[in-house]
Length: 518
Image 1 (cartoon, rainbow, N blue to C red):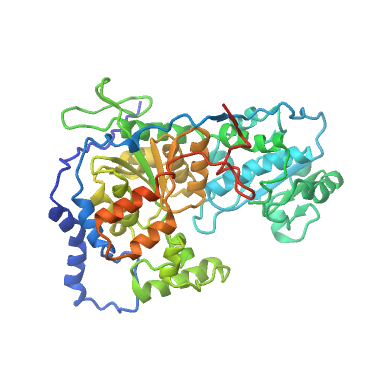
Image 2 (cartoon, rainbow, N blue to C red):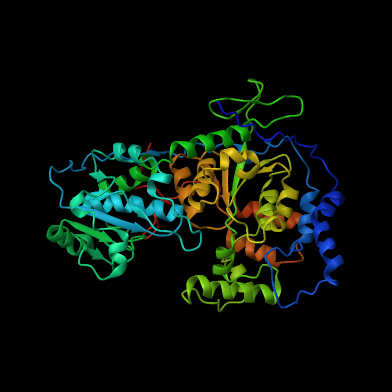
């Protein structure tokens, strides 16, 4: 049996002087400056690999001097108290599964993993409204990530069908008589069976009036595009509960993703120590140590700071005019003018909370909230804009920071390498099983995990983006003032249940549609 030897690394003593920490953080900057005069590179060009100086050096200096604890003494690590709500997915008024289907429903989903996840939930709901047989959704290749993974590559399709067998008829593929209804067929010409103009957040009546006639006439209807094509409001309660049943029960990742996720969670809970030799479990690949070792707690930070996020935000990240021009060019290349340069100044964007937090800023947020350099941090991210140079400050603040790359062996990562959706799936799984989750920007991963963790009553920190933007603009603020403002501004943003309001997503705010008062 093949044995995967987990990376044998040991943690060095964590107490360090602030000056030494700053030297480690700033050495790349000094090194770069030393050779700048010998470079032929023009100042008008910009490279992502350029080493960036810390933008909040006074705060960073103070944060590096913060006192250490045993890593878990803070009330931050305390689980959420019972908030008086429980999952409530089964509807007493749900109609039984009809004997005859109106036809086959196909949907084509674009976006990243979590946008597609929401689209899958909506597809099941629409199939229920139409009394249609749902064909396992087709996942489009994402424009940015270029990942061709299918539904069956990411999600456990047999589990999906089995959980929903009493709610909706689902098939893995079309019967031979409809085999012509494929992605290529709809890409070449206008087709009567394709619904191309489904409005964003369409009502159930829209589908009954516009899609049901196509199903009755042709026996099949294909909706493309489909993302965000079902309203969150004015739907029967059984449809709302069905959407949550799909999201929280029917959608699970394929076994090898779950196994890798479990292995990473185990290694975060039971890290290796110098005095103990490592042993690898032949079946799970988990690192086995002293059975009596106390499990450690960890926080997952989702660092949504890749190039498309940086470009889409139109914010300034310290690279000057050359960086602004490079990101503007990238916006034009990727989105073809659909994402315009911002009409706001950088100060306005930050003060309105429109800029994603950089690795340095998410580190300062966590440090201000009370996490110290003994806190175990898992970094959930794909390709960080600026690479390792951008992450250096975060790593300096949290030397116990881990990621997929250094927690899993190369053999374990071979099945997910280069596949953005599978990489994101592993991060989602680890994020769902962490003690605390925090995201650097309120994107799809943040929203999806916030909803899932709310459903399970787990602690999730929601950064106050507008407050943080204003604090980081104040260059005269002391560490004490910064920390006090951060703590006060996040007292009610650590997992407290919030009821969904009109037009808000049921996947981000599952109560009261899918949760009941206990």
